Length: 196
Image 1 (tube, rainbow, N blue to C red):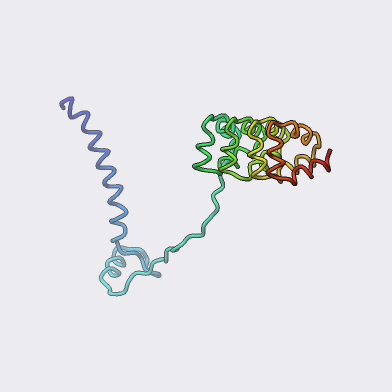
Image 2: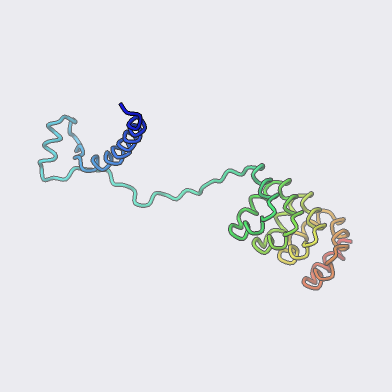
């Protein structure tokens, strides 16, 4: 056998295997099926194919019930996503990534330190609420320069955080853009004055 044929033989065998695996299901659809009560012998198959009565088949479910896909939530993948400097572009394509990252306290804290946090908040308006459920992420959020954009989109999260720990309100009042936060949301100033 020549050397060039040695290399082509496995390719031809693999191609033939693929073609037979594709042809078998098509051939199985054309074969007659057993009717109820047939013993399964060759003569009963011949009779069923020669008779004019159609063979009984199980009806296929037209629309199988839709099951909710449960995604595996991996903390280490969330860490990698939170460290991504281009996360705001990825979040614009799929905002559910932000929800997955905020399910873990460590990745949520990393996300709160992101310098493009305002752009991330534009894709997921509940970001403040998601971040303030974790203590470390809350502190990282109020120290971030873009905290004002996050708080303006969802002030309910910062309200809950201030209610849990009033010191957060004092630190937030020292934020660079605190005046703008209160100007956009006067209720935040009233809420802070009640908890000081």
